[in-house]
Image (cartoon, rainbow, N blue to C red; front, side):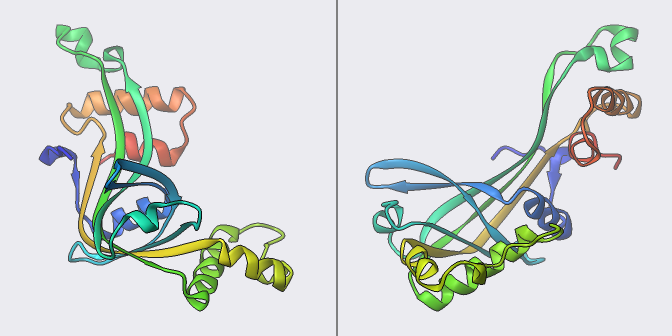
Length: 208
């Protein structure tokens, strides 16, 4: 991914918070049949040295786990907020007219080696962890144990888990950092007027 320095984000805590907010990643891999991409919710644990792990699962009927060797390189793309940016949002445009449209967005690309598992205990622990995470804050939380045991056993047999050992992390938060302070304020005000929520505005027009 092309990342100019003014759009680069490398702080682990910021990247971790981002992938926690946007866990549905596009998992890209090269197989013997060519490039393939799957949308998969992932759990992540990143470390300060640009490493860490990602965990997820796919349907057993998805041939990806048969097509890739253990340790094969993959790319997980986490996508955040994005927005068209009009030159009319820049106060400087009214001064000299030197402005063109652009697109602001936030994304994190994580590369690593993938290893698959169909160990029943691993799968049960992972599914419980993933479910508990996304049931947080709900008035009536659903737990894996709420499903009948025989039904759950069948569902677990129908999936294959995986863990990705992270080797690199690239964060790109393109939020008008190459514009003047006044132009950045103009972008934030326009996004606010368009009804974008605070998290989206923070990604698309950060204050730092």
